[in-house]
Image 1 (tube, rainbow, N blue to C red):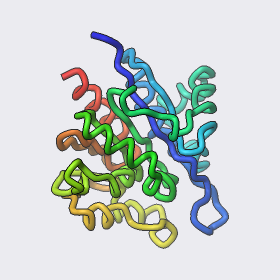
Image 2 (image 1 turned 90 degrees about the vertical axis):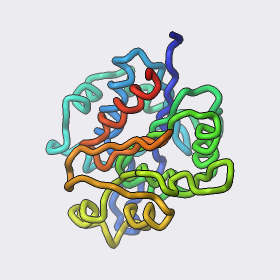
Image 3 (image 1 turned 120 degrees about the vertical axis):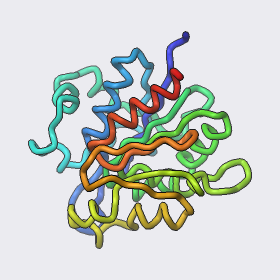
Length: 229
């Protein structure tokens, strides 16, 4: 079997609303899937709307949120160099990849949700019968994507993402541009969730989503399972 090519798309957005605080992508949600893919021999390409180094959510670098995967990434110079040189999303062609994975963090709520290159990429992947996966806040990237009939790709599909109660727990309900759980329901999705902070991932057809940072590895494993199935 030829080597799999998986695209990982990260946010370029660094401002947490108008709070003056920083946001970006959540390190664990990038590092855990990255090593699931790398250890399986996958060829990984990284992209972001602006290209170059994507902003890291500073909270995700705090000691409480470190995992084996984040520690491995902290010691992995080649992976850090790859992350610092993400390709601009505008240069990405869906034909070159077998699947796409979107790590979360609050950043995607502001940029990738509305990014026309991201939406077009998702739509092209689905049309080509290729899986689209996202974890935590990155499930928002699916909100404006439509299938070939013009129907929202999440309509009547079981999906998950960061829950309203988890957003309340991190005290950002009033800061985020929208609540992901509410937005997915409004788009016609069959939103599902586990208890706050518990690992939960779900696949419905070509769409694979995870609820929170703890779910990122599960999503990556489901994606590989689909590709190798």
